[in-house]
Image 1 (spheres, rainbow, N blue to C red):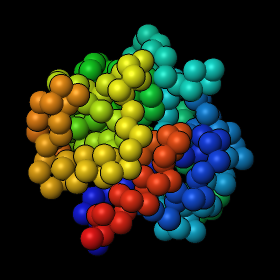
Image 2 (cartoon, one colour; image 1 turned 180 degrees about the horizontal axis):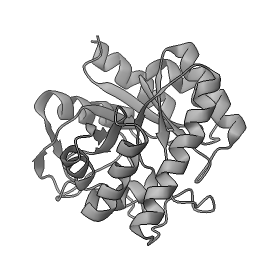
Image 3 (spheres, rainbow, N blue to C red; image 1 turned 135 degrees about the horizontal axis):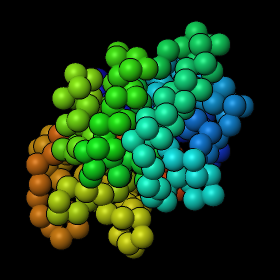
Image 4 (cartoon, rainbow, N blue to C red; image 1 turned 60 degrees about the horizontal axis):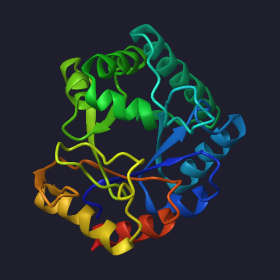
Length: 238
């Protein structure tokens, strides 16, 4: 039996969704703002349905050129509206296939900014709660994203990363740095099991930090995504 949810960012046009889907339990589906389109959303929802995988919206800044990974400084109202709009876009697609959204996980720069900024985190949490109070918000473990959502009474899921390294403050290493991504399958599995079993993670400097691991993310655009998903799934089942 799985000890922890495994989620993956899908519907982004990478081409490996079908191969990854059997090894995960939650799919975060791009809503067209950073990647994907109506056809991809439709296909990804169907894939999830066939594999018994729950689905959630993966909203981002409107930034297809940079895959949603460039910071944008928008007002609270603008952030609220863009999150609500993307949830509704995917909800409409899901409804055609008799599927319901279970969660929301912000993408890229929006995710990282909300982890560090309580105002942005609250705007996102309010958008999610007011759209559907039964939705679960996925946020970086120990961050403002989780704290602000919980204060609003929203259900949360503390997220950790199998394929990313951590800084001493618990944040993810910026992708601009050469050691931000994990490319070795054994290292990814070892880090995942440590986060679940020992409730700690080692930073790039070697510092051991406490962490809450309720859902494990594997990035679908990582070249090793399929291998990671399969290996982590197998490790958790053992």
